[in-house]
Length: 236
Image (tube, rainbow, N blue to C red; front, side, top):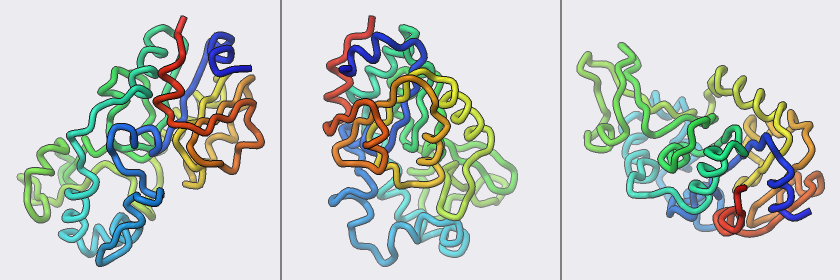
């Protein structure tokens, strides 16, 4: 079956996406050849983006975070827009994303499970007061709340667990959908990649530039850009 035929045949689609969904919006992929993980810093990005580093080297964390993670000039691409259209027309039930950029919501998607949090949400570690990503971007050094507490991004750092409610929601929609479209992810980031095992529906589709460990399990595998593939779909 073609992707168009699978979508026509489906009533309850869930989209599971990774960094490759946002690269077409100009947001760098963490693990590609030109991604963040192959650039040079005083510390490896995996170290900087860890809970321990955040607690012990907060100023250095924020120097990297503001420069490389707080990207606000990116806009939804063809993939984000097509998914929002699919949801609006009742085909797509939810988006489960590993991305923290908020572009699915900006495109119009309503039901989005952000496994790794969002750069748009930040909270004081002391009083829990909310701050926008733009406010954090405009501050210098370690961002402090009006109460004196340190502000922390609502993103899941290395060594931190995923949010329990988000996990339950993502597992629920994946386990009850009839079609799961996995796109723009290498399926090597755990525990997020393990969520796919809860799928027991009719159609498993994989869209990714490179091969993944799950290619052999999918009914349809497309090695191409996510936006190019999804934009060719007609939602009836």
